Length: 246
Image 1: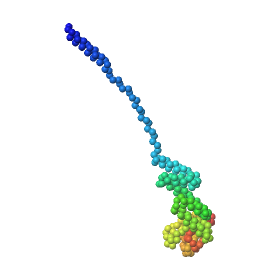
Image 2: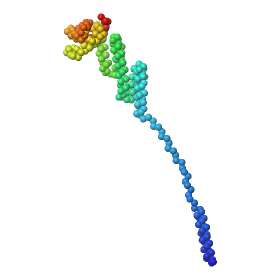
Image 3: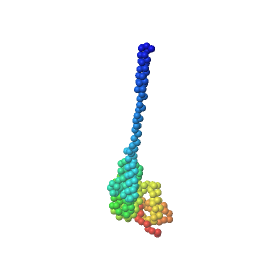
Image 4: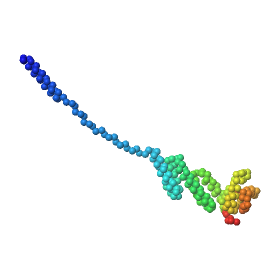
């Protein structure tokens, strides 16, 4: 074997060793370390919307208003009365029907108190209740009606007419002897018989007073309508009180 051959073997051996060393040094890259995935934060509950807050306040003040009304705190104490609470509701909800109905109920209550005072001829008390109702609902037809009756009662008191409930009669309808006036007198006659009332007829002329009396008498056959006719003043029929079972 020649020198060149030995050198060739050596070269091959060295190359083989180097190749094995290189192969042994080349390793697979390490697996990446797993990273923690953060969990999603729980959703925070959303607060009530402005509309929900408004509705809650409306219901709160309605409940307070109705409770105050049941307890009789209609317009007093200031700031804690039924009327004040209804006003707060209307500030939040101007078209709220429960608030409008509640205020109307308070107005009617004051009107009824005024009517009761009018029957007792407590004129100052009547004015007080009507003024309160006027403050709550200006130009209310119920208030206007009782105020007109109050004016008639005061006029009658100054004219020396007897006490009692006044039933006003429209001068125009009387002059025309309209069917509506006849029907009104017939209804009044039935009430007079039912309550056995004595009456005073106030008319502009004697003939008008006699016509009124005739309508009353004809509406209740067999019953004697007892009363007098007073000429002069606003046409009306005054119920002066029951006569008992005569």
